[in-house]
Length: 360
Ligand SMILES: [Zn+2]
View 1 (cartoon, rainbow, N blue to C red):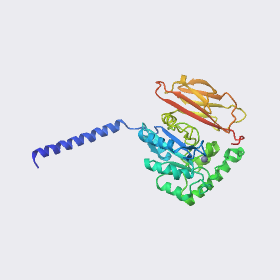
View 2 (cartoon, rainbow, N blue to C red):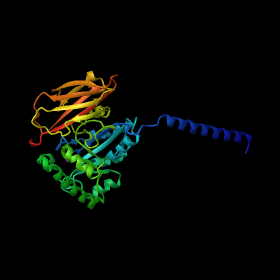
View 3 (cartoon, rainbow, N blue to C red):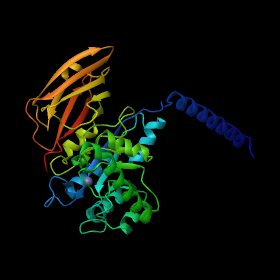
View 4 (tube, rainbow, N blue to C red):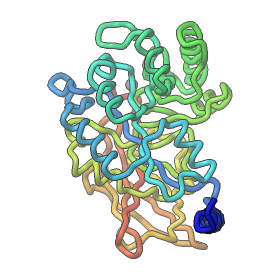
């Protein structure tokens, strides 16, 4: 070896060593805190079926735009289980994480969504109601197994897709648990395992149902209310932004993916069922360090027809939110938004009321 080559070799080793040292210093400086980070979960049902199901289908053009947006804006697209693990481990901090969830297991997932998802290399979490599997308009077990083999996550969405809150209060837990056992038998028979994630049918739940899922070893369950998941989110009432023909346009999609979690530390009532008092009062306790409390707004089913009372104590803001008019739909969303103090970001929270006496 010539002296000159030796010099270069020694120099190269020196540079590599220095580089490794610099990288480790850099990594140490950026150490992420466990339980940090936000997850924007999206909720889909049908794909390219908007002529028949405008309120639960996105058009294929919209869906393709969504995937292209996630790709172009450097989102990390994870399954829901992976995303929660990232939040717990701290890997999520500073990342743009999106989760694609799909409820019910319709045939258009296989026919229309899957080819596009595969093109982008994205996986989704699919919540399956087991009784309708293989029926007209639904995927069959072979297709669901194929999704699982491709790395998709399969969650539970009940056996019968029933209205559990229609049962008398004392029966809800038993009826829900019996349905869950059917779901588990069917999952065992066709997938050889039971799920650890759940999505409530119609997004309707109450504390007794949460307790049953916890008893059966579930890790988390998803509701149908818009919002952003963060480390403090109730894991058994996780928010998702619904996507359909109306909300699926790119402007709305991009706006949702830029939203931040409002840090609601307590929401009352715990049971989101409207009782004697209608319109009902929602009381929220919010860790408001980052939000401009003067800019808080509320919406009822998307309309600014509500009032807010505000009080403050020890850095916690208490809001009492109430619709101006009696709620008349089976499910009504109260949504609260607020800008950040510096005006650069928005925070979002929503709560879904149910009136079981009203039929859809
Ligand atoms: Zn459903």
